[in-house]
Image (cartoon, rainbow, N blue to C red):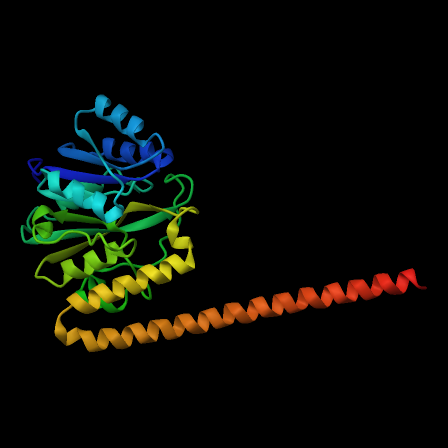
Length: 292
């Protein structure tokens, strides 16, 4: 494995200053040293810029770019525009990578120059990456195919974006879709896997994914809205031979979602009914005690 490969680590950050130091420290501690880390401050109103500048002063391999807020896809694209690396490593500001991720990922392709995307496994954490928990899905080489990524995403698995280490050429003609507020990573995985890029799976949990209680993905209405937008985009862009099957796949997913919502509503109705019954019983009890 040659140290001549420059790796560009792209870290978008919007009002996540509380996590940024931990993420950047995981870059600094990499056992592979030929990297640049591009911090994209996406119009943050907290002290993200101050922290980013401190890291730039500490190590010249860190670069800070300030821009108007445009969303996660816009921030990643801004990083891709100025990245000098042969390889791209994305890292969201609240996530973390194992110190050996870049070195050992590149080592996997010592004799495989045709590999374009190296995907490691991952684990999850809430407060500290030093105490991770198992991933919410099991990744393997067989899942790294266009049809699986298109049809089984979120039902069987998904791949956190920092699991991947990508050759820069993967993004020569593609960028993240900026009109999508979420699911932009899924759309990018679909686009990449639809081409003739070669994937290699490395079964080590070198990406650490934070379970963030403040994440927008906790908002069901937001998730549903952004999922619909992603579906609409993919229906327009995927190869024609997959469109009909994908349309039926969407119908199946929303049918399952409708059933889930019906169950939630029924549970809520039962809960309200129970509380109402309890109130009536308590009122009757008080009335009887007063008039005993």
